[in-house]
Length: 151
Image (cartoon, rainbow, N blue to C red; front, side, top):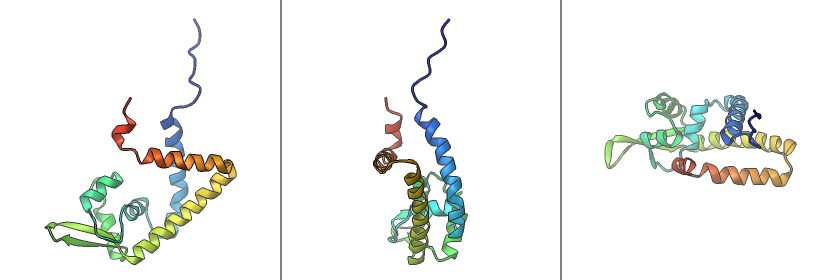
């Protein structure tokens, strides 16, 4: 009986999930420096200065239960980082938008995270490989979920 042959590489999820967890853990101190939790940062990344997203649409976009982010939204609004205004077409719906301060905090946190990522990539990958990795991840992360499961 011969031993089963192993594939030439690990599955994508087997490589990406542990890497994602490690990168997330490395982001937490940077987010704390900006007074943000991971959920608060996710909310800020999901918003624009124009009030275009409802709470439900935002929750879906960031992969959160809409009831889970209510406390996060309340905190961000109290800090002056977002606004929640009634939708003129449906007063039961609240439209979310970043304030100027919210945009500043989001951009500062994202800048700190991406600077750290750039140092990590520069230490471990040649410039061409780092650029190719970022391009590939950008393409794959933009795919709809149903495309990831397609044969």
